[in-house]
Structures are given as structure tokens and as C-alpha cells.
Image (cartoon, rainbow, N blue to C red; front, top):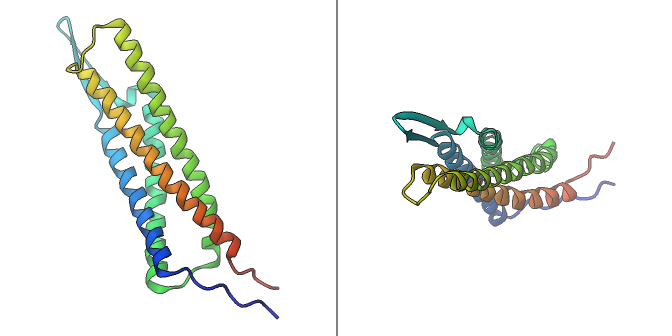
Length: 178
């Protein structure tokens, strides 16, 4: 005789999961917008130099991590809304949530770390080479880099919390009996 199926998650828990998914997607969307618009034009002795985010490899990685995370977050958001509306969960959803949350959260964490690291290193190098103050256009460039990395870190934290919930859901899922 098969054990009875576990009780479905409470409405409160499902609402919290939905809000965490929305929060993750919002953080990632803002990150993508911030980092992709991060440019600065420097005027050095009648020469104009335009520095874009894609000139810095770590910023490219950060954008790639954010875009991949955003696609995953939107897919998960649709799946969560579907589950919330119908009350039905596909058996593979537990594994998709578990593995997806783990992999994407680590991707977001490494993207955030890369953004923080390169922003600090480039800012320190710029300060060492050129007299620097808070009105310098490069300060705005580095500030956007820090802001993007911070939002990516917040998205990682949201997804890490979701990862804990997906781990618990996987351990409590009904086991098919053959």
C-alpha cells in the first residue's frame, strides 16, 4: 500500500515563493538595465574616449549571468503562477526547481563577485593614475558597476532562499511506486 500523498504547501508558503520569484526577477531586470547602459566618455587632451560595459570582461560576465538568471526567473515565475492557479504540480517540477535554483544561484553569485572585484580593482587603478573626485564621470561608471553587482547579489540571496525551499519540497515529494 502506497503512503498517502503529502499535503500541498499552504497558500501562505506558495505566496511567499511567488513573491521571492518576483523579487528575483525584478532584481535581475534592474541589473540588466543598469549594466547594459553603463558607459562613460572621457575627454583627455582633445581626445574623446568612450568606455562601455562590454570593454570590461567581468562586466560582460555579470551581464551574461544576469540575463541567464532573468530567463530562468521568468520561466520559473510562469511555472509558479501556473501551479498557484491550478493547484497541480508536475512530478519533474521538483527536480527542475532543485537543480535550476542551485545552478543559477551559483551563477549569480559568481557574477556578483566578478562585478565587485573588477569595480574595485579598476577604480583603485584609475585613482592611482589620475586625480579623482566624486564628480569625475568615471565615478558614475564605477558606481553603476557596484550597483549592478549589489542587485545581482540580492538576486542571488533571493534565489538561495528559494533553493532551500526547493530542497525541502524535493525531499517531501511523493515517490512513484513501480
